[in-house]
Amino acid sequence: MTEDQKKLALEILETALDITVSTNRPDGWPQATTVSFVSDGLDIYFGTWSHSQKVANIERDGRVSVTVNAPYKAWNEIRSLSLAGEAAFVTDANEMLRVGQLMMKRFGQELAKQATFDMTQTQVVRIRPKIISILDYAKGFGHTELVTVEPPKR
Image 1 (cartoon, rainbow, N blue to C red):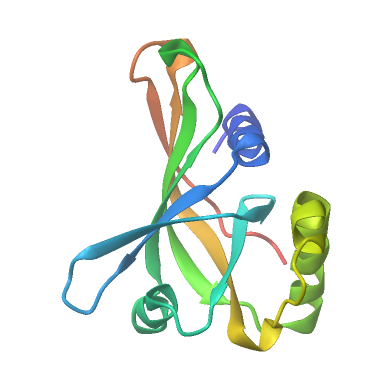
Image 2: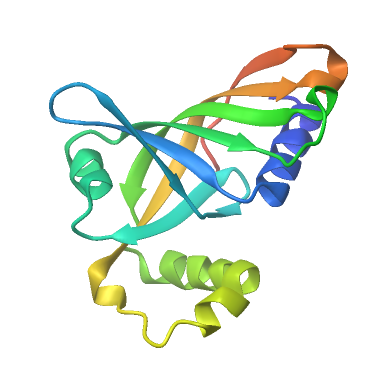
């Protein structure tokens, strides 16, 4: 992934309002769900009810596909990501604190409207992209660049 590709991917993640996550159901059919999210670099995080079908699907098979679309008004402004990645549940306290900070920064006003928020019934999921298809129609209708993501150095 070049620096320009990474910069565009990060811009798309920063401006997108939500993502669609596709998990693998036990019967083999994909299940696509729209969720709110935050990102830390290319890592994507979302929270979900701990008894949801998404959680059961990820427990069984952590492979996911995700689409992320930056807002646009005309086709030549379409910029989006379609990625394949590995989903895992966040269990590390430091990572959970970081995700909480990112969520407060992005969704603080919405979270403040909630009377209660029971985190004991919530799973936080991290998606780490492996392959990303970057769509940038400003470079031409249907322009796509397929890139492999190097694992983060932690």
